[in-house]
Image (cartoon, rainbow, N blue to C red; front, side):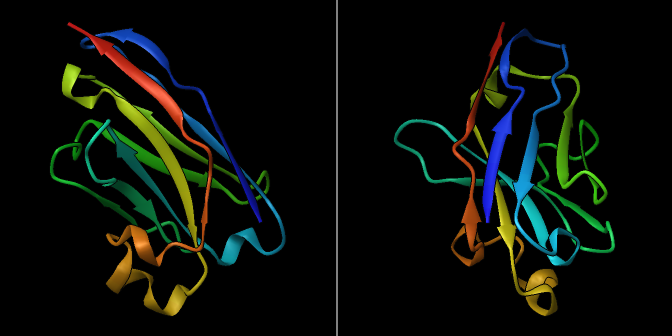
Length: 126
């Protein structure tokens, strides 16, 4: 399995971006998928997740502003980010979780994800 994230960039506060993640490998539809973010010197932080039935989960800091979605026909995951704030500035990583029976319990835990993309930088200017 390989993950390729793209779609980050520089945007002004209040703007929008939609990073995407391409999953290469078999049985994408059976994986839970997550987005995490990280700033220098900080731990990786959970942002959003979506299970194989497209049930979604969000951190409190992005709830109501971000929307995670998936297209199983294209092996893609998207993170629509609206009303961006300077504190959303980070490298954003997509990740794949290969134990669907545990996803509801463990989607918050970065260490439980089996595969990671390389990250895409999002910078929000004030």
